[in-house]
Image (cartoon, rainbow over all chains, first blue to last red; front, side, top):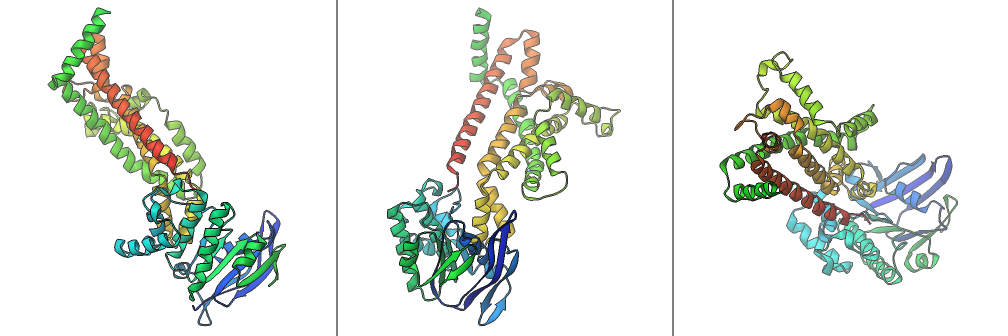
Length: 217
Length: 235
């Protein structure tokens, strides 16, 4: 993997409430980074800013390729992706949901179908391929969100509280999916979770956030 | 009571024998209202997209006006179109008064606010998470908009169907601008009004039954569409 992410002195606030304060970190290795900390410490905000979904009030997000800063344009945004805690499934079949990222990149139906089938098998949703996505359970919806992100083969995958609203069984399945990603040597996964035990189970690099800053590594 | 029953019997007889006059009236009604719906959709859908996706001054006022115009009284629309198209009116030179085109214009004015307002409501009701999900998956701004429109599709179709129901059932506007000329501008609703006045109930009842059947089909379709749309609550 050549894509690297560096966050420098990120500050962010909403309606006068400071959420992030001079938060800095450089994601320089491949593997699974887990950001943990109590609710409201700024994990999700930091993740969204890193994933270029919202801009910081201060500081800078830099993406580097072969040591050079690259422009934050559509081409870069297509090399990364974020799975939101509320996935936001489209009102269509499971397979069309998973194919969405490929469709917007202009993939042909044949190309998409092979990749989508493989990805649905990976997350254990092959048997729900033709089902209308909004009828899935919350655990299955979260797995669909992960499949939809993984199918586009992002170089950096952000997962915001991927098991916050799912049952224990689906939490186990999702954790296994995340751990399977370790075998992909070309990807970095950055996860937020408030569950400290889960963070320790998943992390190659464990980052602890407190009051809007990364305080321990 | 007997005359009402007789009326029903004769009405069903007209329907079953596919009476030529009856078929002509039904065909013209569908042609006029269908054309008005197409024009209203072609104008109303882009406006609903503009209101749904863009920010501009007086947008709130535009939405309020559209919502108000959803309840436009057909006779008022008929009167305004009449004044525009009458010989002494600004568009009198086009000689459109008492033609099917005048009726299409009047019904377009009635359908347009319904199509645009209900479509706009459907678009803004789409969960904002859909927009974010599209963005995170690498969609361009146009692709994001298309994803939102796709999510709103059942609401948009329901708006178009509601407008069709409204124009098919209205009588005031087309009576004023069409003139109810037999074989030329006489449609289902104006025929019912005229034949009732003449005491000729069988044709009026036959058309009433068909109008009700059309209304039933529209409502059944609306119910089906809304049921499909309900599934689309995002997770």
